[in-house]
Image (cartoon, rainbow, N blue to C red; front, side):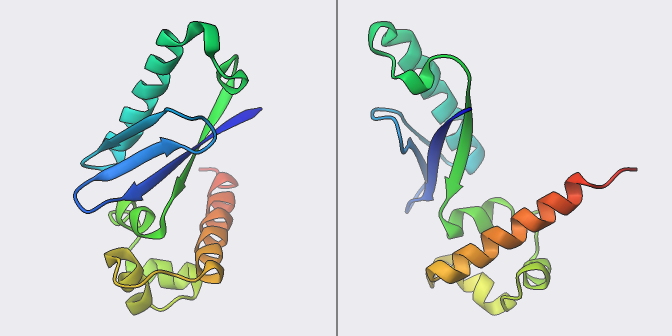
Length: 131
């Protein structure tokens, strides 16, 4: 399946979103949810008004993958994951996670990978749960 990679980043006042692998698709909003909806609307408008020049990736079925900067991800899921729970699943101290969430510090590549891998492991475990 084809993938459209959407980058979501925290700006000074809002969240921005753009398609990494398709030029001309941008969005934004006050929240991550607003930015996601904005980018979906942008894709729809792009397809509507560029019928003759639609990139192959937008022709047929495709999957949208959201790529966050660490600060945006931690803030978006703040209501679901506490710093204590993130420390438990990642092994990264709460204080350091708070620094990443506030934008005070930027995580090194290894730390970002550790957070991502830990969340993917948790997601896999949750997918295997039945009630």
